[in-house]
Image 1: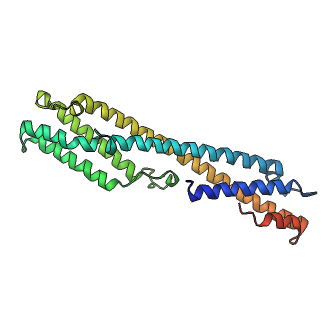
Image 2: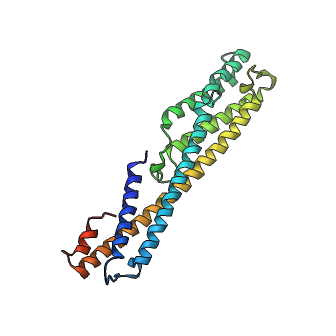
Image 3: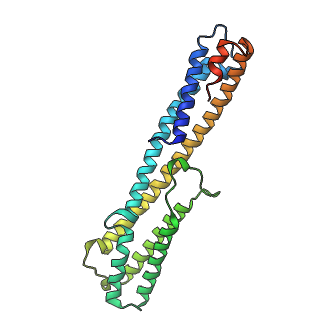
Length: 241
């Protein structure tokens, strides 16, 4: 289902198209400025229509990137959150609960689980741009922290040599290292697709602002040229853009 904002954007562009269609039937209409001419008004409508399609594509790309990352961290059967416990148990069973590597890994696991709780949800596509002033959302900070903590766990496991030899292939170092690489790729993808979406949303917002301003000028021109009680003005005055 389309969001309320998308419905609003669609209604605005539809109303602008109706205004344009009406203008073409008004005998003697004279645009007050160059950019409010029917030709240029239509060109802006066409540009915004294309931008709407582009935004929809960017939203889909971002949502897909988010889903991939969430699967790696939280949803897959061998996701990061699910391998933490067996990995820790494998080290603990070999070295003992009080061994330094065990306490180090346990501390990192606690951090990852804490970041997960504090992370909340990924920004929704329509929330692009609502991150902190430095451009990095709390969600992105947390994913970055979790990735680093997971990398540190792998580094610690690597130093153990043959003392880390879990039976489950998914918990062995090659599998964990591959997962880390996939996570880094997923993080990059989520970041770039979110950035592209934000740029698209900003561009579209600016274009709609321009469309609104041109529409108001056109309405004032019609009211001036044909009169406030004219059929021409009545046809377009209630079309909100």
